[in-house]
Image (cartoon, rainbow, N blue to C red; front, side):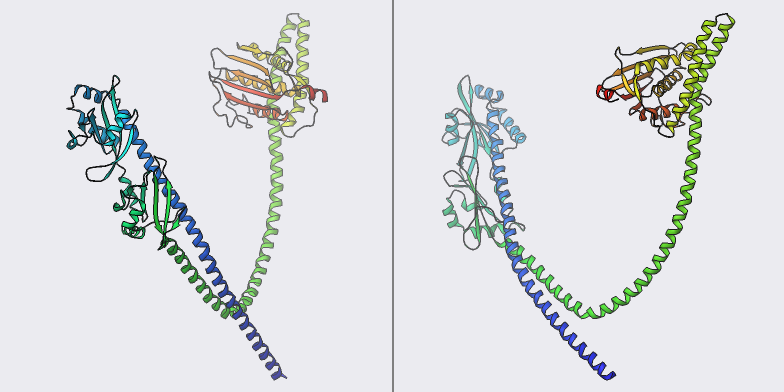
Length: 590
């Protein structure tokens, strides 16, 4: 029985092995087919892409060559126009005194950066030149002389010199009192571009409007037509000669045509007197780049196939190791989860204790802050009551009971205000739910000033009050608004204690918002950042606890406004209360 079992297991393993071998062969065949398809598609794609890239590069290069030529020609064209107006040159031609003229032309050459300058008299004789060897030479037969004499502007001329080399110049006649007295000739060095173009492997030439080659990287092409030049030295030979002078080049361009031996020709128009530029290059760079990438790709597929063989042979062993490792990992994960659960339960218990402690601390802080606020706000009416009681006592002694009754009435008003303050100060610790009503800011400001009347009588302070004639209505609580104004006014009084001529200005303005400004000429505010924080004060101990501005800021915020402070330019501080204006729509809704 056991033998049959072992035999069946062996057969099963054998069939499984043959099945895996067939799958391995199929995978390898698919990989080989994919590699062949990838190499073929890569070859086509990269050939097209590198060709397009080199075309774009050559197009940019041709544009750059043309732009450099045009730039040099335009720069040189301005020189004769300027020199034709030079009083020194005109005076030298009129006086026939050219002792310093050549030196002057040499300085112009060094300063402007051109090849050379010639000054010809009206007969074509060189009277001055940057190259002193040319002084006295006759240029009357040359085309640039008689073309300049006939024209009224600068004339460009391409001509052959005594050595047969093609030269380029701008010439312009010099006039004095309507008569021609000479010609200034500026020789332009365009041959410098040939040496620059020789730094690449392209064979480049420029033709004039008649098709004659006037600039070329191949010296034997100059002065010939294109067909004649290619017969003298073919394009591949010229390219090979250029390759010998450089090690880095790019090739293909737009509008190209194949000329045999893989040579490409491109042509571009130069916007100057019908000139054209042409260049020749080869396909060699594209093929080299594509072959390099294909070699890397084939090597990558070879490595991939070797790796596939290795992975197939290691598959069974890795599977066994994987199951063993997975079992051990599951056991470790179970232990780690148990520890994390225990730590989380402990952290939750500690969090509950911390929350309870924090809640108790918040309650104690709120009670302390409320008691300090109540003490601060009740000091003002208590001080006023003390002043009114002293006044009433004095009036009674003087047998003036009617006036004493008025003082008692004010004391009664102050007692009612103290009750309102104790009720309203709860908003500092918890927002209240009292309903708001329309409040005229003018009445609130006048009432606050009347509350401060006892303190004002004790000091000599110049009060300037500017209120509009029309009502400035806001939606809020009049008692709380008066409380804010009293706090700001009291701060202004305290700030002007050390000033010889104390001044306080109250300004109420209405626009999109109601703005109440309290300005003093005191020492100003040193720490604007901490100004509205609770318990921040600059007063001496016993004069204040630093809650007035914090309470006022909270009240203004509850009313939908903003309390700001800044230092005035002329000295002192400015506090501004901004509250939303109660418009007709809101008033009708109320």
